[in-house]
Length: 148
Image (cartoon, rainbow, N blue to C red):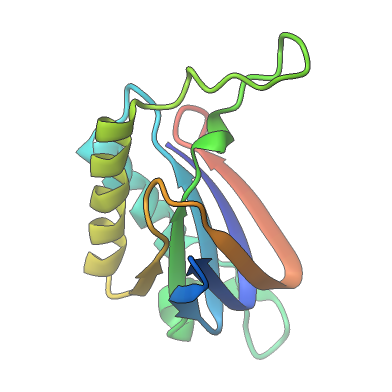
């Protein structure tokens, strides 16, 4: 799986003019399932994200994890993280998992994050979404389970 994390002071997802997911302090997580991903992949990625120390402690150092801060996660499916731009100028997306598998893994990942005690809000798989955020820091990380 691939994930793009952004530490945010607020973020929301809107579909058809309606906000369907919204958080204050926490992480906006764009996630993409790849063809070889499994439940174990989703679970491992969720655990890694929960342990990452991306939030400031009292001394101003990034020393606290999302659960340490009581922050939330806004999880949005993002198949374009699998983009192949090696040929030409139009990205290809054949490296992303097929929609049925991707949806199941996306939902599995959400369940894994929630099971770690993190408050979760979500986008809508396959929908045309508008995502709004205020990046805090800015802090943005790229995670790829194939290249930890």
